[in-house]
Length: 296
Image 1: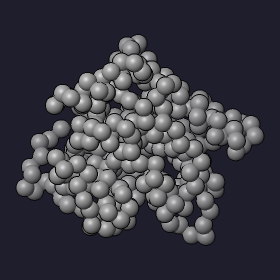
Image 2: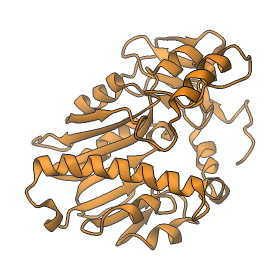
Image 3: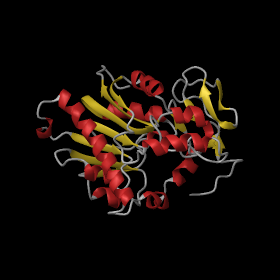
Image 4: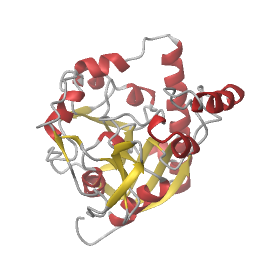
């Protein structure tokens, strides 16, 4: 990860959701995190420019997050995948009879080392998008095809449409989330499904109490902080309908309710401690494409 030059590598931007430049501080002790007065979107401002963000997610970034096979963190990640996939299957069951036989096309945006695609049942036709060309070889092992590039900015899919588009732990990193919603609508097939998972929830108890010390407030990486309300505003704006939202905690392998409650109060009174894992910290959202006469 390259060091940021404050004088030339940072920018001030208007709200990505509504375009307003009218905002207030989200935390008085952290001047770089603001909340839009018009739509309530919370985001980092100032922030790294696009070219700097490109350099964040190099091979070392992925390697630092690659889980050792058979280790506890690897097993925990697989459990999280299973939880999310079960929710996806439940939603598909509501919409399709015998969907397992329909060979639904599934595009994973930000597919990284291909772990989620690997966990996904093989009755899906699996595709991936990965920004980092050095990681593509990992994803290709688990997908029919992988595109390398920026999903939101001009990546060419030809005439290809997808039944499902999935993004996990990535949307908060995007410099322009509205481009993701717009591109997703245009690439989804009729009545297609959009899945956004592990979204840091800025309306969680942890975020509201800890503010800048919230464990998911990762400066220069998580440049947007969403709530269910602001995600739904994006969905409505780009012609989607939210059909599912949950806040996984009790089912996750990371939960230790008594310990987390104890640490929640203990850490708060320790100046440099971040919040622990806690109820409501992340969201999983599923939405359906609503039809329109023209592209959005």
